[in-house]
Length: 198
Ligand code: PCA
Image 1 (cartoon, helix red, strand yellow):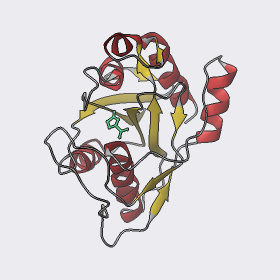
Image 2 (spheres, helix red, strand yellow; image 1 turned 30 degrees about the horizontal axis):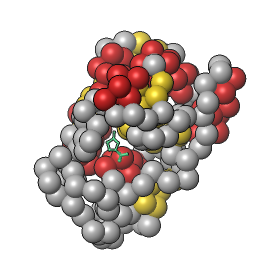
Image 3 (cartoon, rainbow, N blue to C red; image 1 turned 90 degrees about the vertical axis):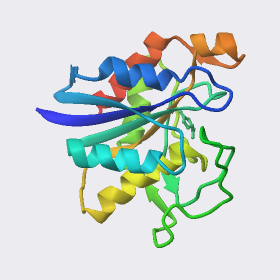
């Protein structure tokens, strides 16, 4: 059976709950569409998160990588098309705030996702879940982690599905912070459907 690394993030900024934490924890250790799922939760820390992902890639040597992040305010599931070589945005959980620096000074400007993002969007919509491709993952930790993963794949010449999917808030989070939200069950179901596309 193949192995899939599924990552979520811890809560950050004004969001006391990150629905991706629960998804990574729930699917950890399960079998899905011929993949053994290894779920891991990443910090929101410019100095640490990328290195954590790379450690998990080395430790688990997965056949596929799907990283999840919360996009508070988005109203649908958005597989990301591209990661850019830039750190920017608000403070991380350690109080660090980058200012547009490159993630890897010698790295390319960007990496395209190695996930079947079009098929994922089609599959989700067929199943009744609103979804669309996003052309920007921002420049915060989600972009940073996506870039780290794809950079590692490129450097090690690993041609494997890998990339990032942003998801909306869960209802539990929206009760704390008013924003568009989905049920945690639906969020979980959509992640399972995207894995089915691999
Ligand atoms: N979302 C943030 C970082 C962690 C998360 O879940 C982002 O979109 O960059």
